[in-house]
Amino acid sequence: MKNSEIKTMGGYFQLQLSKGKEYYPDLIKLNTSRNALEYLLEIKKYSKVYLPYFTCEVMLEPMLKMGIPYQFYHINEQLEPILDFEVAEGECLLYNNYLGLKEKAVKTLTESLKNVVIDNAQAFFSAPLPGVDTIYSCRKFFGVPDGAYLQLNTEGRLNIDMDTSTYRFSHLIKSIDYGIERGYADFVENEKGLADNEIRTMSLLTHAILDGIDYEYCKTRRMENFSFLHEKLSAVNELDFDFPEQAAAMMYPLLVSKTGVKEKLIEEKIFVPTFWPNVFRWTTVDTLEYKLAKEVIYLPIDHRYSLTDIEEMLGILKKLL
Ligand SMILES: Cc1ncc(COP(=O)(O)O)c(C=O)c1O
Image 1 (cartoon, protein in one colour):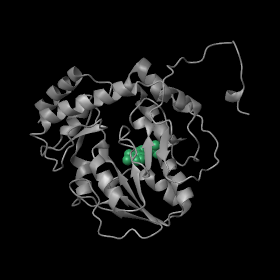
Image 2 (cartoon, rainbow, N blue to C red):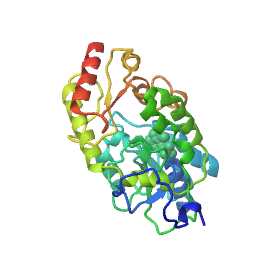
Image 3 (cartoon, rainbow, N blue to C red):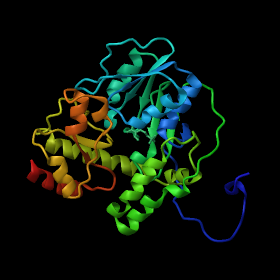
């Protein structure tokens, strides 16, 4: 029996968290989304995985660990797969719902192809489609150190231990006392520490935090911030891509021909990420994926920001364009 399962009364108080309801109570709760993919591969026994060049390197972990062959595929300007290959019986295709903006493509793809696995790591608020294997990663959207969800369209389940997250918290708490920048080194360490971990179920601690989040608020803020930015930036945005009318997206993607904007935004302390540094190693300069990784600016639109904050960011950005 784990200490957390022994019933006690009295004593000191635990960290006090609100008790609400997690967003996906019916999905399988795991420690990371790469491990959700491993879980799925253990159950489904796929003999090969097709995955996009434009994704995060850690998604290779399960295939490397399990010795499963994999093959990269290219995406087009709509960020949709270029299907110039056949997914054979017993093989699967992993597709990213990029930034949560590709819900329509997810629907069409899963209706026309068997064995599609949807990576919703960038699309927490995109509900899984019935019968479609779908993966989520919680810390890309909320202040948790780990945690993932998996919808699996079969009955089979693995018998696995529960993870613990106690030692993955320093960046989350340091940033409250000292600010985001002073917690950054710890964040990087935590990210490294998530590599090559066993598949475990989600820790009680991460789960308790996810239980206390006001998801409606977070979703609404993202939607409003996204729409606002798109309204203001669509005329200058050179991304050749159909934006959905509305989306509780992860970030707002902006492409401009002027160089150096990304670096200048970072100097102004608007921290825009690179999705994904590994793409520079996997592809060549002439590919779309390379361009997306190098040139697209991903602007924050999350629940931490009001429209006033977004307007301020826009003011700084406009001066750089
Ligand atoms: C699109 C995408 N999928 C999956 C992952 C992996 O998620 P996790 O760190 O929860 O395994 C990442 C990055 O970490 C990602 O960017």
